[in-house]
Amino acid sequence: MSDRETALHSLSIGDIFHGRSPNGASLVCLVTAVTDAVIFARRITTQDDHQFDRRTGTELGESRGTIDCVAPLPPDVQEVLLALDRRGRIVAEMHRAGIEPDPEQYKLTPAERRALRYIDQNTAANPI
Image 1 (cartoon, rainbow, N blue to C red):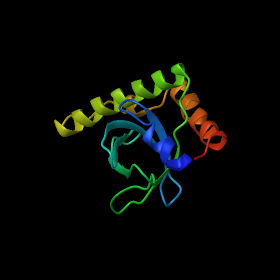
Image 2 (image 1 turned 30 degrees about the vertical axis):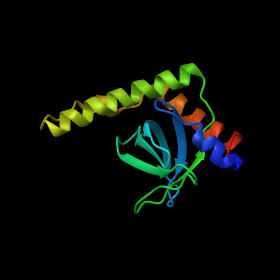
Image 3 (image 1 turned 90 degrees about the horizontal axis):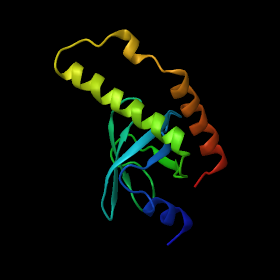
């Protein structure tokens, strides 16, 4: 097994990883499930569901993004991103229920902005 495969196989439910879409967009994702072949994840900032090949890290389907960093995050950064994910799920649920969320709910807090900047640094320092 290659180092890349080993790194991808280390991911488990609740882990956060970074990927990059073909157009260069950042994919900060939370692992929601894993099988021997697939990593299921939710993009934290958009709440979109994604699936990645567990051997290659390439996204399955049409988007074809690629996982490029699985390095663990410091606990404080992990907590902030998990809170951002929870808020995103609440806002998405409100939309599904036909309720328009307060525009303030879309604004990133200073801690969230720092956490997302940290992701960029972490990805650059720990590529797979």
